[in-house]
Each structure stands twice: as structure tokens, then as C-alpha cells.
Image (cartoon, rainbow, N blue to C red; front, side, top):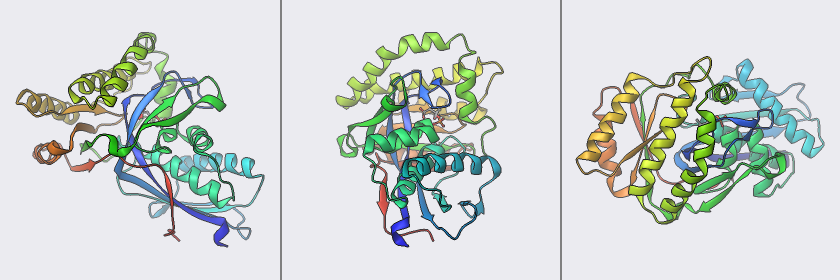
Length: 329
Ligand code: PMV
């Protein structure tokens, strides 16, 4: 039986240059390259077991059966794995996050990365990293960046076979921290799949796509030079631009919230006082405060003092998606 069961742990990731908008929505081929850091304290653990005795797939997320939308998306992904392995067998899937889902920490990134590795191994496949990244991308775009370790670039490509992520520096390369200030743990109202689809209706999108090659180069240069003063402004620009496009899409999408703005303004004040901290945002209300390791305690302590902040999660650069021996069932 154990040959048909596998468990994977995978990190979520925070994008320094964001993925927002697709060239091909069905295959999740993005408009642009994106660059991210894996988050070692925001992880998903998933166990998959193929079982010929099952008549239907059983999918449990957290402590409860998956809802209809989650179930459909997971089953579509399992269909890709079954097609690769040329099997029909039903599965039991159990998945656990150590952070709140759908609230601006990319839970779909770690979830589909973990599901891709666990399901392919349980099906008896050993895919190389690139193929795993291609598979994960089809479940959730940003999941392709949670397959490799450390600092990662997703090469946009133009078709299924050339759109995947690669590690551009290992976790040990730079002792950065992402101090996540959780402003809300509620599930967001507009999922990123709908956000990507709406992006083209913003007339700012074309301008963003034109500006990105230069910003991507700035971020790569700053990362390779471990230069936070150069990285910070570039990631702040990119985060605000994502929200600009969301807010100018038809219909407009407001992930922006008063608490989030208060955290951003606090970070700007701390920086004016000499603390080297920069913010980035995802498609949710939480703020990711990027700093170097030596400043992380101070940033976390100050974030905890803001009344809008419910919880703080400090992340170092995380490793690649990996198999573990401790199964969830
Ligand atoms: O992977 P998706 O479809 O959930 O899109 C992720 C989009 C952002 O998190 C907002 C940006 C990114 O690049 O991670």
C-alpha cells in the first residue's frame, strides 16, 4: 500500500515581482516573468493515497471535507496526474496549512505544489523539477514557484512546456525575512483566478507589461547584490501596481483595506526613522514586511503594536517542495 501513498511539505511564496494576468487562462501561462521567495513558516502538508477500493475521490482540507469549488479544482488537478500516470484509481487526499487560507498568504501556491509532488509520487511517477513545476502551474500559477527552493523566477514562456519556475539563488544566499502582518484572516471575496481574468480590462495593464522587463532586471540585480535599499523600492512599486490594476479592472476589485494602509504607512514611518523595511502585498488584505534577519524582531514587535494586526508570522527563505515520511493518515 505505501507505494501508493506519499506526503509532501511545500512552502508558500511571496512575489517580489507579481504574476497578474494570463496569456492563456486555461493553462495559466502568465503575461510576465515573476520573482519570489519561498516562505519557511507558511507551509502546506499534503498526503495522497491511491486506493482501488474507493468509488470516489475523498478530499479533506484542514479538518473538513473540501467545499464544492475546492473539490472541483483538486479533482481537475488529480485528473492531470492520472493522465500522466495512465491510471483511473480514486484517491484520498488530506491537506493542512499552518497559516490561514485565502487571506493574502498564497495558500493555493503551497497547496498545489504539495499536491503535485505528493500525487505524482503516490501514482508511481518521479517527475524532474521542471515537469513538476509545469504541473503545479496548471493548478495555480504561483504554485510553480513553490516547487524549486529559495529565491525563484517563473519563466513566463509561451506554451505549456516552457512556462515553469527555476531557483535563481538558494535559501542561504540572503538572510531576508518576510514578516507577515495579518490584518484579516477572512477568505478574500474575489479569488486570484478572477483577478487575472479581469486584469486585461484595466488600461494600465499594457503599461505594466512594458515596464516589467526593466523592473525584473532591477530586482534580479538587487537580489544578487543582496542590496535591500535597491530591492525595496522596486518591490513596493510592483505591489502597488498590482492593486492599481485590480482597482481599475472592470468590475473593480478592492483588496485594499484601511488596516492594510495603516500598516503600509507605519512601515514608511519606521523607514524614515532608520529601520530598513519595505512592504509588499498580495491579492489580499495582509502586508508582507521585507527586512534583513537582524531587523526582523524589531519589525515584528512594531507590527504587533498596530491594533489592526491580528497575528505576525516571521518567515526566512524556504526550501524546495519535499517528500516526508510522516503521513497525515
Ligand atoms: O497563483 P494565483 O492564481 O493564486 O495568483 C497569484 C497572484 C499573486 O499572489 C497576487 C501574485 C503572485 O505572483 O504571487
